[in-house]
Amino acid sequence: MVSHHHVDSEVGRLGTVLLHRPGAELARLTPRNNDSLLFDGIPWVGRAQEEHDTFAQALRGHGVEVVYVSDLLAETVAVPTARDEVTRAVLDDVRLGDTLRRHVANHLAALDPAALATTLIAGLSRAELRAGGGIVHALMDRSDFVIDPLPNLLFTRDSSVWIGDQVAVTSLAMHARRRETTLTHAIYRHHPRFAGTSLVYEPGLEHLEGGDVLLLAPGVVAVGVGERTRPAGAERLARRCFERGLAHTVLVVPIAQQRATMHLDTVCTMVDVDAVVMYPNVASSLQSWTVTAGPSGEPAVSGPEPFIVGAAKAMRIDTLRIIDTGLDPVTAEREQWDDGNNTLAIAPRLCVAYERNVETNAQLERNGIEVIRIPGSELGSGRGGPRCMSAPILRAAG
Image 1 (cartoon, rainbow, N blue to C red):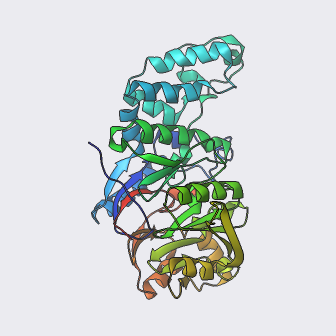
Image 2 (image 1 turned 90 degrees about the vertical axis):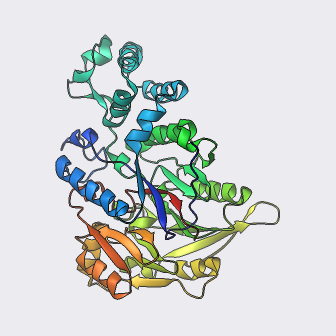
């Protein structure tokens, strides 16, 4: 059955969302590898799963259909061409060498679709490989990974973002995350649910991550550029959106290139059709360049100007309201680090947020925004909040 998918805003009533329930891949994290796998700590896996289940249930409780990456992937690799595609991507790893590559190929070929999907996400250690040989295998420790785990798959927002009725499968900047888009790409190209879906962006293009893409209003897209998304990625997305009639304006927003502000949605998310919650330290300084389709087809660029001003103009509203959390500098910095600004809107004036950000949530409620609080002490160790952990694939028209 072909299902209809469409997203043109951040706050339209959420219909369907793509999540990934954390699993064995999180248990692969150790003090030795957590930095290279982009986690700031070693999460308690059982508690992280409980927190994620609470998140999913909060969404279901408001009528949202929740679909899981692991389920879709298992169904996708049951399709022979998809299985070949994702297996080939794993075997292309130059670290394997020819002999070990052959053993890994044999191991994967023996797995049923569900087991293959699990292995592609959780990874494979030397000790788990059924058979091995060659110099690469001999020099590996038993705990070394033959296939790296994907703990950041938890943050489904980054590897795909819907713009209208088309999906951008992104090009992730960090080596530890690039194989995530191999799986997402296969799902959107081969799973029956997404038959006929057009891709407006694909892996291998200039670096672009979904956490940097905000759909401010129908036809208006903001793209943060900084640590993960590069200016060339923003330009490529703008060109493709203009060519396909998916947007009339793209705002390019530089953000600090550092861990605490890795994506635009770590400092700013929408909570109403005309309101954002924004980290106070950047509220007055955030700038944007406005990109529109020029008469010759070449993108026309103007600016810079304050982001809030440029956004309001593009959205054709008088003012884009800032819910400035109004916190003292220390509390503001702590709650921004804990993803206080990374909310997921279920509908206008209704959002999901981590319960630990007490002051930010109180300020949202003082401004008429209903907050559904969820636990996130373990989930947050990968630097992501409710928006990061969700990829909307259907919202009511904005």
